[in-house]
Length: 247
Image 1 (spheres, one colour):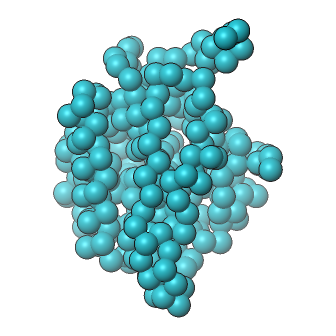
Image 2 (cartoon, rainbow, N blue to C red):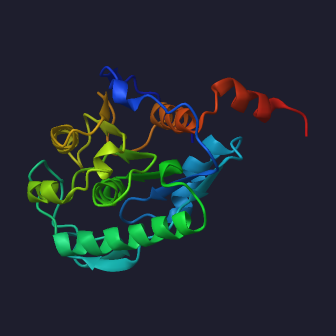
């Protein structure tokens, strides 16, 4: 099924989002799915956007299954507990559960770094609860990562964690997408999250989509792809040439 087209409202990009002059080595996109989904479902939707980019590897882990109280103890995949829906700007999460999930993500990142991937070529991304986990993991990681991309997410930690955000983590650029018609993670949660990051001195580009609910659309994924390719120093023309060259 084709993804619906939704015109975005763009804010001026922060000049700190400009890519470095060169990016050495291969890159990794670590994608964290939303609750009740799987890594393979995310792979089917996201991976085609990077099929012509051999410099980039994609990882789609799947969250463990757990009973969720607000869903009548239904057992679903989830990175941490869900206190209730919709998620608002003031929703409190079980921070112990969030921090446990962050530790798991940090283990995945550390494994990549140990294998020789530069931290600045690691992109932590996610949708919904996965987006919340992505930004929490970036905020608490001791090094600057390539970039963080949040789709329809929120900040799952209280503002008291601001003092625990390492100086190097604050240098990781963030791209945040959010639909203004999102009924599951309210638009106010996205706005509040971006404002919190900016209070930390972080570069956060926020893209709002007036008619978008709680889903991914082609415009988001196209922009997301280009944002990552810029960090790796890959031009759109180079990628197009690869995808159209004879085998």
